[in-house]
Length: 245
Image 1 (tube, helix red, strand yellow):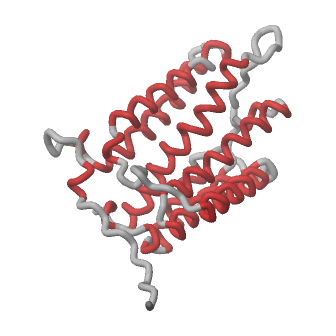
Image 2: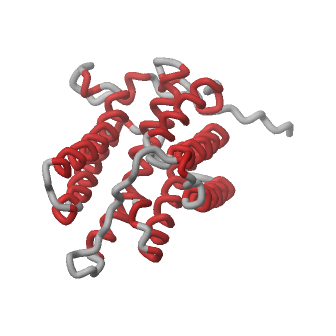
């Protein structure tokens, strides 16, 4: 028997991911991917504002659990929108490739730190208390947020939404493998400049984007991103390089 060529699955119609009850702003597939990310960024802006108003580092570090909880709540609320994550499993080869890419990105991330590769200065996240002891509850929350929540939230925004939206406004109908070079480059650059280590961010964004395009499965990018962030958390705690957080 002649093997049939592999064909990507037919995408669900755009309306299939909308929350029942109307076509308003909060029911749009784009909103489901933008709002968790926008909330995350709003908390970062709030932390910066409060720091300027004189809030102590010890008080501000508790904003991270609040930020993580808010993002988790939104992801849960919009969970039925994320058909690209529903019942999608990775083949062992895809999972292994994602983990390897995640490790390579981590190694590059902590080494691509020359002065010209940075913009501004990161305050980081220092979980030590006034006595210099590490607050392990905060560490656990930080690592869990970075490894389990941020990869899902960011890959839904940067890869599933923005990269495909740049290619075509009806982004749900865009197969990852059919995303053009311009959409990849623009989304990767924007992903890079979101980070203070902008060059490392561009490298990471390119790696995660290629995984998504090649596999057609957003979980590839999520797993690679989670591997990078999780191992980075371990490295930060072991070396006390809190600015990388």
